[in-house]
Image (tube, rainbow, N blue to C red; front, side):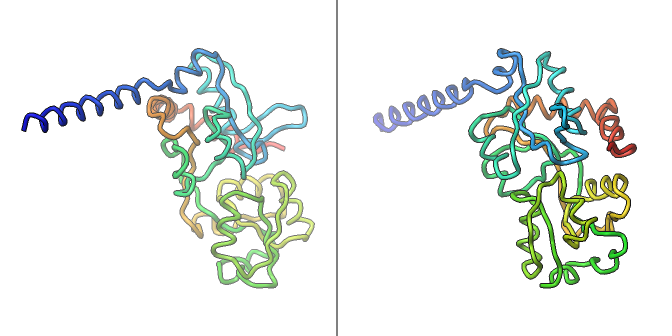
Length: 262
């Protein structure tokens, strides 16, 4: 009995020691404050969320919000270029403190990273030439060998296409010029989030968002954060909550969705 008590005590002390060590692991919150900069991964190819201009400056909804987050911390932003294929690996490799830019929440990504609290609900819908809207209303209409589907590689749009539209011809193109491919009739339809489809509809006459309030798949957007860093996630979530409560978040969104840029 005495030995059992000693074993239990030792196990408890070991457990508490492990917990204390886990609690003492440095947080990205401390790192950002100490280094004076916030490393932000972004693809720079997804209007209205993140876009790299020809002059080398980033712009978009999430770019404005990332700058707001940095201001709340009293630090500067360090932009880290990424791609849809490498966003999660870049976060796992700790190349950045946060990843932004119209990122969809998925369970596959959740296995490797944390997500911030939800930014917005934003489901998948078709985007096509306005003259062809009637042809691409449903998955059944799109999932045909004669339909030329176009998507950026590596993101949730590609995943949706492979899962639900295996019979369509699937091509990949740069997300900066993919919409011109539709206008030039080099592709028929694209599956993307309703927000992007509505933005491109306003920006490019001839393209129409199809049934934007009736998504083909439910979706949410959030920021990527390092897995396991609870202190950092708590700070980002609180900043986001206050941004929405004060209207700062809505203002950043309205700046882009109300008056699309070039």
